[in-house]
Length: 391
Ligand SMILES: *[C@@H]1O[C@H](CO)[C@@H](O)[C@H](O)[C@H]1NC(C)=O
Ligand SMILES: *[C@@H]1O[C@H](CO)[C@@H](O)[C@H](O)[C@H]1NC(C)=O
Ligand SMILES: *[C@@H]1O[C@H](CO)[C@@H](O)[C@H](O)[C@H]1NC(C)=O
Image 1: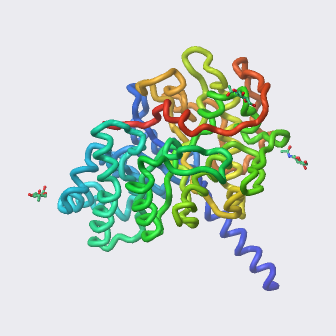
Image 2 (image 1 turned 60 degrees about the horizontal axis):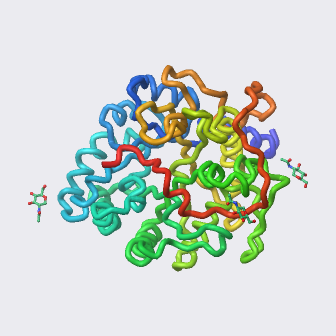
Image 3 (image 1 turned 60 degrees about the vertical axis):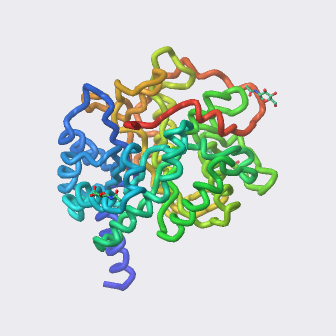
């Protein structure tokens, strides 16, 4: 057999061995009708998810995950941040109680400090802002003391950390957090080779400004609608890239051009209470299918500002969650109904050609785009609170 043939067989085996996808799913539990953790994890495995992110360190879930190949992201709740920042033994205790019993059999890879902490603009929130990076450092020390090196520490933030996002090259962090929180945080992420975890939803800027942002651009169908950033000369064919690059430019302005991104949440609502604009099954399916295809392409596509760099991505969310507060769309981000059946067909591996998906009903709540392409005002995103389990 020739070396070429052997090499080809090797490649084939390599591709076979990576059966599950690199795509992750957020497993939120704010529903009173959801399947058991056992069944939920079975569903994630059947769907070939590569990663799962939970909003706490639920012992039952972490125990069950030890029997899977899923890479796991766990979260320290917001109300524990200040204690951990103040006292190293509280950090050590957290790791002892919530990581050591499950690791390494449960493949914990990301440990997230709080959820969208910098979106809480209250006195209590401001205390959390001050404690956020010190708490991340404390947990890092605890992990290092246990000789654990493959768990990255981060904190998922919303797009409202940016003052302005358009054009991407002109973006910047909010002035109230830039020097006090973002500078030390970026330094920490850089030193520890961790990631900037961003919750990024093109749905929100689009739904708040559908007059000036085309649906095609938000759903990755934007061949006809491109925008050019006059500052950088970069051309954008979709809103997600534009939002991600605004974050990359903001980090570069503070002297950190190389911190990699993880999309800790993204998605599109499949319904609402009252025919909310654009919240329908066909748009949700289109967004998530196109997203998965982009994020599983090899070699990675990246973004215009950072071509070729992979971005691990978690879709929000596994189930429709009927106890999420807020507008009707909040309760309809799921890939699955609470009974475990799919809301629309989805292939997390990104291998299924688009034309092989069964046709979906046409939407009746997409308002036609009339205006001229404009950017996204970051502040608009703030109004919608996507945080889960925040106390
Ligand atoms: C830190 O926490 C530990 C354990 O909870 C406690 O025993 C100790 O008194 C605390 N130290 C300070 C300085 O608060
Ligand atoms: C759309 O853009 C135009 C300027 O081109 C602006 O006057 C208008 O206010 C924008 N509409 C919305 C809804 O933002
Ligand atoms: C986008 O347009 C280019 C030519 O401008 C074409 O080659 C390509 O197939 C189009 N892609 C899609 C997804 O329509």
